[in-house]
Amino acid sequence: MVFTELVEFVENKFGFDTLDAMLEASMLEEKGAYTQAANYSYEELVAIVSRLAEITNSPAGDLIEAYGRHLFGRIVNLYPPMVANFSSSLAFISQVDTFIHPEVKKLYPDADLPSFKLITLNENELIIDYKSNKPLMSLARGLMLGAADFFHETIEILEDNQADETGRLARFTVRRYG
Image 1: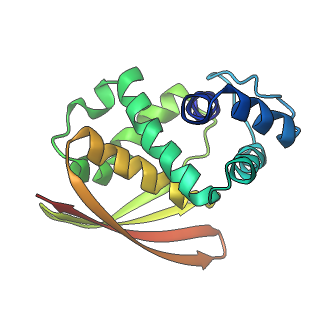
Image 2: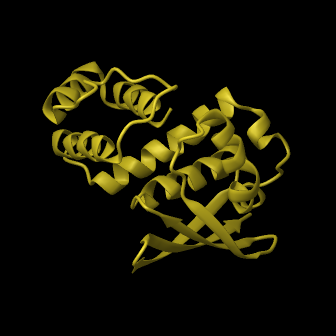
Image 3: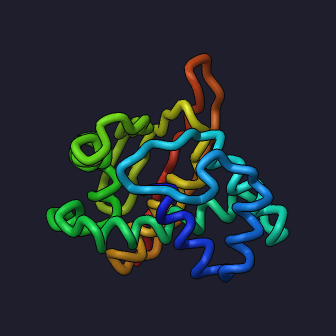
């Protein structure tokens, strides 16, 4: 799903010519022909986003964050039950590992998902540790912003990145306003 939605995102945001140039320049094994039923390599994702960053003269992290925001909206449209039991972005984000990721694993058993460890949660602030074998903190930020959009909330996300021997770790502090 990450790949099929990325192709759609690029075409909608930047147009078919940019999408075509991105896929051509990336020299991809799949040549942009993705299905939701398959898994694709992290390296292919990096190649796509790197080429898009070059073509659009935009920072890759900003592109991935914008894509994550878009992706959240698509997830809600495709799988509405995933958000049905939540009343706020913080409640949703706090349950990603305990509720959302098990549902994703049912749909995509081979998915290599990050883990989210809840540190603290109150009405207006969440602190959560993100750990992944892939440094996709920008995607996580974008998904969190997408959750805030969905719940019509304003949030601020502070990020403290740390490297460790098993991959990447980031601590997100998410504050809700208003």
